Length: 243
Image: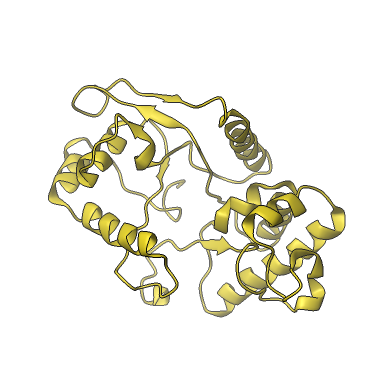
């Protein structure tokens, strides 16, 4: 369907943590369990901490996934990954090398920071990131990976906001999203958001299915659209953000 909407920026969501590989199982055995499926997220994160051979096998699989997308007639505007697995050292090196080889020079970033808000409108609120002591190591890794991506020549957003981590939290999802918009800083900001339809992805959990419907409702709400227009927020995709 995306080929019918060339103005839509479509990235590739690389996967090394769920299901079976696109490449042949015998070419990536170090990434798989005894049944030929990828190691689950927790195991794969430990598995891909180090090892040149694992990096090479990750490259094989990532290249197969990117080639499959290209064969469908889509050129990805950027890359990211399921469970953020490309933040782990072996997968990071593999994804960066293959993306460069295939002409993809943009990437998403990750964040675990919370935002504290106050006031009533954009630039009127007190905005700063806070984090827990427990989350500090992960936050440091995310920042380091962003720095490495940029050092390697990839374009990334300047910032990332997760609406669910904007505090104080309110139950109304529309108001909560507007609070997230009010935390925007100058530059390019990625907002983690999953709009969709009920049952559009058959294997979604009930929680994820509800999330898609909720975020679709938020993204089309007139209060959100009015806030975006009133405060001069420019909506961009990875296709247009860095031009």
